[in-house]
Amino acid sequence: MPTDCTISYQNSGYFSPLMVDYLDQKSNLKPLYNRFPALENFENQIKEKDINFNKIENQKRATLVAVLQKQYQNIATSEITNKNIQKLKDSKTYTITTGHQLNLFSGPLYFLYKIITTINLTKQLKVKYPEYNFVPIYWMATEDHDFEEINYFNFKGKKIRWNKESFGPVGRLSTEGLSDVFKVFSKELGDGTNAQIIKKLFKDAYLNHNNLADATRFLANSLFGKYGLVIIDADNSELKKQFIPFFKDELLQQTAFKEVSKTIEHLKEYPIQVNPREVNLFYIENDARERIVFENEVFKINNTKISFSPSEIITELENHPEKFSPNVIMRPLYQEFLLPNLCYIGGGGEIAYWLELKSYFEKCNVTFPVLLLRNSVVLATEKQAKKAVQLDLNWKDLFLKQTDLLNQTIKKQSEFPIDLSKQKTNLKKQFEDLHAIAKQTDASFLGAVKAQEKKQINGLDNLEKRLLKAQKRKHSEQLNRIATLQNELFPNRSLQERQINFSEFYLENGDFFIEKLFESQNPLNHQFTILTF
Image (cartoon, rainbow, N blue to C red; front, side, top):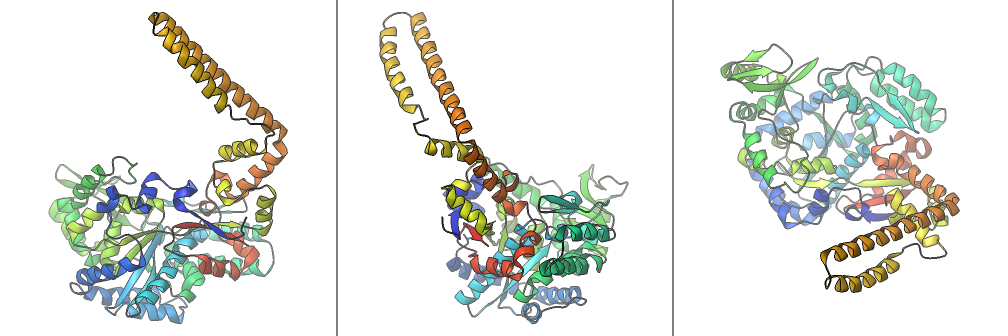
């Protein structure tokens, strides 16, 4: 088995039918996206974005740069990131964007994969289209309020959790109490050069910043600033002020609900990722983020006594745009309106809900971006790779569901065939003759023949199961080794990238770990990469 190799997303067994059909460019989905992610398709994407962004509202670039400069004023910034922020003033500069929650210490590994995919794509685009500039953007999900989703990370099978009450937007959340988390994490890390680097990174990010947005910006900048990543917090009054017309439209016309509901009708054969609300906005304060609900001609703030008439809520919006927060349906429009963006990079769940939004974008005259599935990686040690070879396993085998993998192994290792399909086929042929005879008698005899056939087929099924069970006992030692290996590579029988924090691999490999990720990832190949360290 090669140490580093790939397996297609479609063959991995870890993507939904919707994502498989999207990657296969099935005709039924083509009306739901603008252009498929291929280098040659970005030329027309640039032209379309140029018309809808640069030539209509060029003031947005100046505001965007001013806001970013303010957000970066207290953070050590690399020369390349500073240049990228300045380039955003230029009408020949475009962005490639990914977004992610403010998970504690970055959360699971795929946080890194999202950003690396984004940075690598900007490099490829610069080679293909040298006359343009391409800036990688990390859009921080600072306005989310699902604290329970982000207040922990896993390290060597242990959950490092931040116990704290949270009610408002997580980006505004105080970092008070994280010194206790740091003490627990420090003990788990132990000593050593890389352990000290990780400890310093955690401490500088979370103990030296007052809120979670600033801490996350510091962390992401420390990891990726030298590659030119630009980090944006869109929970900002100046940015939201520009978006007021769309907020008004949502409050008074409910365009998102109408357009997305129509699109969902075309996605009936797939599970729907997100359903729109009649009003897809929240009202936020430092300690609250509550839905805006329209009932009986009054806008009510859910779980509060606050209410507005239509004219009053528009006045509130114009005076305090920072109090209005788009939900998952409106956030993509807000992002694409603000940024000169060409492509959004996300996981399967994210791309699934973006596919619901194209008609909404068209109605609002905002260019719909190219949608790209982020890179996915399985990380293995050399020891694990050697063990797989010894067990006669390839990567396609290891991506199987564990029951299927163990059954396949038994059938391959058994000294005699366990599959009784041949016997079942012969039995069915014998009963075909009996059916012909039965048809010439009465219905009761025909029923007896069918019942006997079913009974004997069931008997062979049971024998097959018992045979398989007996062989499993005989080969239990090897099966246990296979299950152990697969559980190491796919913890909790899930993708490693959704379970493990980057620090676990950085502890062993240092900067080489991140450098190898950059070198190995091709954003547009739609393949799982298996990397051996």
